[in-house]
Length: 112
Length: 115
View 1: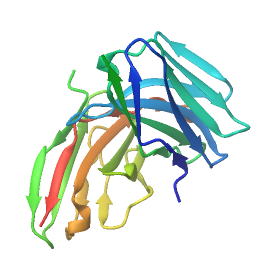
View 2 (view 1 turned 45 degrees about the vertical axis):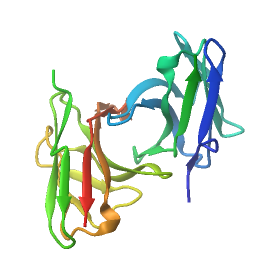
View 3 (view 1 turned 60 degrees about the vertical axis):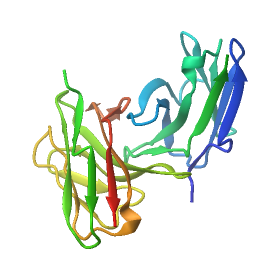
């Protein structure tokens, strides 16, 4: 049973516009959430994270929003650039076990 | 600073053969883990460790063994490879202190094909 879900396998956005990637989770014991970016034939690289005590975290063009009551988080990229084209994974860490569970990923394509 | 180093990068095995995927990190991270990436399945946790001498199972541990004798190394062993283990394997590490961990740092991956 998938505890972290990314229901959109792919997303296309025009350069300069906002990209919104969504992630849902089911486990109430998750208290730390992360987003990763992955290019082909490379390992995932960390983008941004958020603790469950916050509802927003920003880092440059990237903002993560957390809605604990809905068990939902999203990543906003503004403005989107062609170099942002990659697969994005959300991940959640479970309190106590320290397991990091990943979603299935969303392939973002930013069109020039 | 090498970060997380995985070897080999590519490996082809026959069904029933055994092998070890090596993972080493030079960041003095206590936390290490192994994932496999398969199409449409994302990254699935195989095994993880919060420190030397401590290992635990992830989401898909069957068919894999791990040990953690040093802080730096976390090898993943396939005792009898099966075609279902054809995948790309990633090792990742993180700091672990005061019951908290941070972001995972990943290696470049090891592509394994089992015939």
